[in-house]
Amino acid sequence: MIPPKPPSRQGKGSVWRFIRDFRRDILSAQSDRLYRAWMAEFRGPFIHSFTCNDPKLIDLILRQRPMDFPKSPRMAAGLQPLLGNSSFISNGDTWLRQRRIIDPAFEGGRLREAFPAMWQAAQAGVARLAPLADRREIDIEPQTSHIAADVIFRTLFSIPIENRIAAQVFEAFRDHQDAQPMVNLGGLIALPRWARPHSRRVRASARRIRGLIRQLVTDRAAGIAQGTAPPDLATKIMTTPDPQTGACLTDREMIDEVATFFLAGHETGASALAWALFLLSESPEWQQKLAEEAEAKLAPEFGAVKELATARAVFREALRLYPPVAMTVRQCRHAETLRGRRAPRGAQLVLSPWHLHRHQRLWEAPDAFDPGRWQTENGRTCMREAYIPFSAGARACPGAGFAMIEGPLILSALAKAYHIAPGDTRPVPVMRLTLRGKAGIRLRLSPRAAMTMGE
Ligand code: HEM
Image (tube, rainbow, N blue to C red):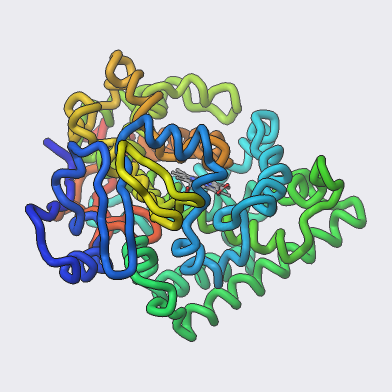
């Protein structure tokens, strides 16, 4: 069965209709032709954009000359109340400095140290789902959100999601999402800045989240000063000086980064896990294979994660079919010639993992769920050239290594404990801040031990 894909726009329509549809749902507003095109130019009243699907073009923008294609300020504007000027939206020298300080926290050795916290969050997630695993239909997205948020708090600040402030941040964050349901990429880039004011509620919820994070950061700064801070990611980031200037992040910059880790780390992980579980629900063979692997190899040791090859292949395939960051936008710093066409200074370059990962001229069976593809020649080539769930180049996700441990680990823990069946309706992918199910992702869980004994 082919996993759900939203309908695409057929043929041409008016620019205004396109913009209206684009704001509503960026994926179904796109033309079907983008699954075959190498590049597509769009001129609207407020935007001149190029959707880039040609792997060579993506390589140029992300890997070869990233400083000439900074992040689009249109995207930054929507996220600014919550993220300030964090690494996710900054550009130029500020961004370079931020990455020099953040990146060491996500190196291999640090991930090994973060592993026990991930393991605990995975186990806590399995336990939290137990009362719901009686074959009733549930929306899995809030559950994966809970687990992914728990991972972030445990690894960053050594506190579980039940901690008073952590629970408040999680709750305030949900409020923030409700307050700005239109913070999807369509809403952010299709309209000019003046047409996208932040509501009072959005600003208030962002202020509340940042206030709570400020408490965590202030407490941690005190702990560092007294020598009592645990050796987690927050301590590492707050005590790493910029190798060029010797200065650490200020408290305000640290608040920006923590808000970013929370947003970028938990929204994306939650989306990827939810889609992976859905794909497993429709693929009994892969689910069985994964459960058997988990039964044999899942263990509370960092080294065991590399044994989880099936879990990794499934998670990777979920990130291909349902990339949490389905599109992102860069801006031309200078006029450029792209595939023979002139792109003026300021033109918006849309990079779409959604289309690239399903490109009909690149992938074999692009819409099919097949974790075995990574062993094929086409799969290996495409992984190098046409697979960017974490973006690529200097500006790639610093949490990619973290996510590729967290994702397969949690997937294994859940598949070991529960049998996963589809709900009554198939999810429809829509692009919000990350890729979500329009009416959630509905599944039915039951304990695997009970199932194997009783059936
Ligand atoms: C499955 C999980 C994840 C996915 C799919 C993902 C994907 C991405 C993508 C595509 C970008 C680039 C966005 C763009 O260019 O507009 C990005 C950036 C970023 N991600 Fe992740 N991410 C994940 C997990 C994480 C985690 C766990 C963290 C940290 C705890 C994290 C922190 C960041 C940060 C700080 C950036 C901004 C980097 C920069 O612009 O220099 N992400 N992520």
